[in-house]
Length: 426
Ligand code: SF4
Image (cartoon, rainbow, N blue to C red):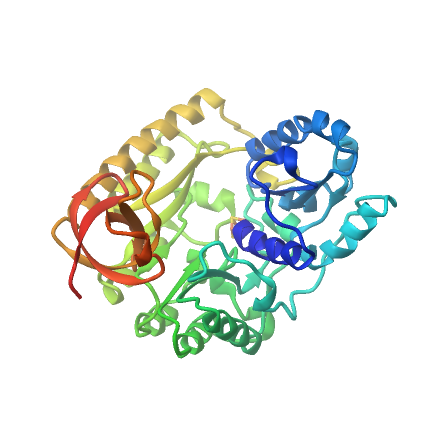
């Protein structure tokens, strides 16, 4: 979501005549697009902003802005915490940036925190995408789930879906600009359309996007297991452009912990969903999010999480230990675990998942996949890297002219997550 917001911020700034600098000391404007999900990110932001104090003294025209969820969460408190900051605006108020900059440049009361704006009328003209063939598209903002550990509903507000017809126009504009792949974004894409009175709105939206000529691949994240219905799976599985990559956060393997988290599903329901996805999309690549060390989690309950990981065999997982967020229900729950216990559990979890990722990757050696080439490879300029439909990163010998095109690659070598291969004829 933050990357999608950054696309829009970049576009607005380019329209105003700003260009990007390579070094921060050359900048007239520095924007931090923040995340509030974990405490660590907030602490890092404070350190980074404070480190700009000398620069700010040297260049009195320098404007420092804080955007994103942390801005929405702390609002004007950021000005007290970090006096170096001139502008604070939330993720739903990006369109107000020109006005805020005008005020800041005119030396008026800077900043001014903005509250929730609308989600209408965004045009693809206004965005800048770092990879012109691949764009992120917000289809639903906010979240109404209030999982007990999560701060997102407090900072991003309730779910608001962008209407189907607007999204179709937007995505067609992107395709006309050369976009071949879109990633549809939302905190819970499966809730898409509920606020618009739609039934199975997400499947309906995908069916419409699938018809757009010139678009090749459609990805989406994040799904909420509670809202992913068997009907949606069947309807989505029939669509040719939807990639075989499903991110299904399960968070914890114990029903008691899932209940405390307020996730709205049981382990058994979740496993039914996984089995259903695998039945209708046989080559699907599954990934997940897991939190260990939730308040009150016993050793046995943590082991249930390990069992889930072994049972489902995800190709990859985002794994964290629980980090209390002030204002959420879980932050004041009894049974908070020590960092030592949480870190030790996380290390065990990572070990189990890493082994599975390796084994799953090895199964791909010798197979050929269509790959959308995205960039030069990090290892060497004579290699390029891209992604398969299932979201696996592959690198292979090739030149930069291939970037943005679809090619076939045979996998020769597998590491934990990334794969290496060779270009083969279509
Ligand atoms: S579904 Fe739960 S974890 Fe995801 S954003 Fe909403 S409240 Fe947070």
